[in-house]
Length: 552
Ligand code: F6P
Image 1 (cartoon, rainbow, N blue to C red):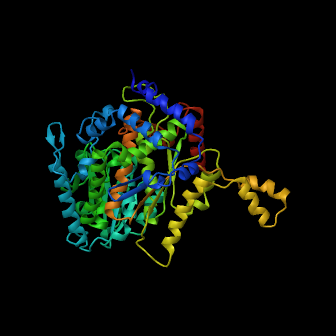
Image 2 (image 1 turned 60 degrees about the vertical axis):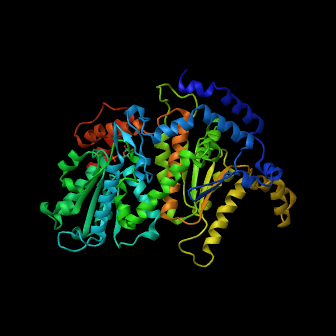
Image 3 (image 1 turned 180 degrees about the vertical axis):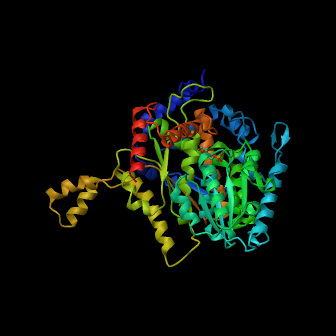
């Protein structure tokens, strides 16, 4: 039987469907009344993080069934296979071993008969030396002035992870270096970054696992030209350009000195690569000790995911809750709501992590899935979102489960700002839970002096259904260890969901298509010929480009 059929034809899947019919409309508030310990009973701690999942549309029975589902899909064995380096990325015939990059245990990790740990440790050692030289002004620019700016050139996973780390750990920036992230193929982005910089004091890191990504190579070439045309020269390129890539040949061809190339490996996916030398710009900003702490935090979450029983396993529980909503409530989105300015880049990173991993509709055995898989991940920082998109969360026609993410202590404890921030976070999840009845709205309006007739009309608009689910993830402070654990938590949540759905969470053939087609459209834009070989819309848009460009 195919992976998809064995899922939806299983007894436990059918049990969950029946269970959903039975309790799907029950109100969580009733469960809170029935169980005064619901907070404690639906609560987990792991690697410095705490998860309150009591505000979910689940009972103990629901969790029991979901755990049975995980067991039936042999989740523990699949987790073990991932950590052991089996080729779980079947379409590319590779392991997914980002966990090896933060393996502080003495376990060997074998790939093709070789232990990869010595090479990983050696790379961290090289990163340490590099950071030391740059941060201590031992390695300087061509005019002998110390570096002031680092431009990290990369896109997708070679951008979002280090960028998240850099903004999340801003309080730990202690080198005085400014770090800039150049990702998009947009003349505006590169212009805005370079116009403020001095080539003599700027270091470039080209970040590309493949060294074949159009945007990254174009930006890298443009930075190289800018450097050469503004005081730099060929002989100084090696001082100012470094790279992180698994394609050493192409990096050397580009002009990077081989000793300035940090390795990447096939067994690390782009969206899981911030733990490798792709994290170099971050390590330059916060120092290698803090970078190691970030890895330690992720490792603590890895150990939890690998060893905790499923019922106490935070990534597994979050994965199962997601499956419950996607497959039984028909929900297709999930909001990430950090209440921490430093974590404002988290939704964008998790969007790539989750949607590139589980945005799949074919199972590992090549059959169409017969159920929904990864939801749309979106979100933004609180409280800003409360004055914008939270309206839909409260009163929209569809519900989107939310993850509220909140440090209990601020790096900047001024006045009572943090208590106000936390109070907003708590009251949003409270409002989603309890809503507001029409009667209460009516009462408020009449008490405010409105006539019964007017109040009846308005009360309906003000009614908020409530019973909308959320998780609250909380921790003492956004430290390197906590941030590492938090990102690893989501990596494992996504992996566990992929394992249960039977999809490959580690390839991304959909985005590869865009790369192929992009080249053909570029040729048409740059040609004098009127195109007729694309679809009608693309032909028309290419013609519009020609016309508008010629009118400038
Ligand atoms: O756009 C898809 C993608 O392959 C991502 O998965 C990856 O993170 C990104 O491109 C960058 O790839 P590379 O590091 O090879 O330049």
